[in-house]
Length: 258
Ligand SMILES: [Zn+2]
Ligand SMILES: [Zn+2]
Ligand SMILES: [Zn+2]
Image 1 (tube, rainbow, N blue to C red):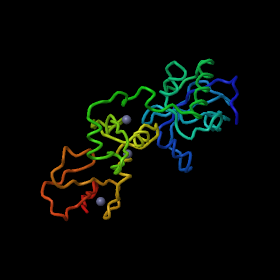
Image 2: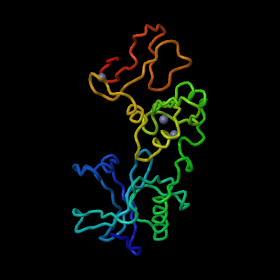
Image 3: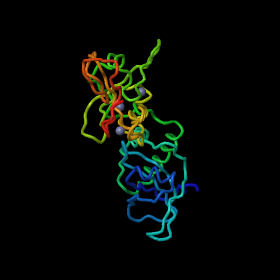
Image 4: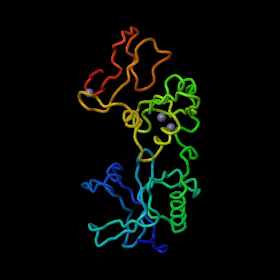
């Protein structure tokens, strides 16, 4: 399916974004809501947007429509392997692009489609667009990184070369009220800023062993002895008396320690 450059370009909002992105692969029952602007027609171009970790474009397609109830989106234009942050599109086109359902002005539509095409081939790094972590500076990342390694993947980089640690604005970003800055390696930081990427907890717990009793993946590290500083997010201080047989992990679901 190819886009007809003479047809109107619509911004169509889909929610919840988790269902949109999963349905595309698994074909599970569609529980997605789509919000179209008024006056759409068969053959029009549709830019599908979601409100994920941050507003993002997930697809460009052609609307196939027999009636108001019988429609489909046929993939068209560049195939987007990764969602494109709306902020990256705004930076390229030079005007604001909201995720409200609407029909774009002709020149706007052409500019956005061109920007999507360029982004699909050479994505703008997340740190080149304004976001919550730009200029975040609330802790000594070098010291924290040397002490604990990356809070998300736990890697402590023994040997001569380590990453230059970065501060991620909050373990709860962008959904939870939890506002605790965390120190991460550049690789984890990239993952955390993918528009459809994991939450901080999902990423951190995915790097830890599952609970041997309940199989949950919500494992906290336990730190025995006197820590050299406040333990990082996801690590619990276990007390000052080291017996040599203390549990190293604690399950956040069933409280099992091992
Ligand atoms: Zn990491
Ligand atoms: Zn960040
Ligand atoms: Zn458990």
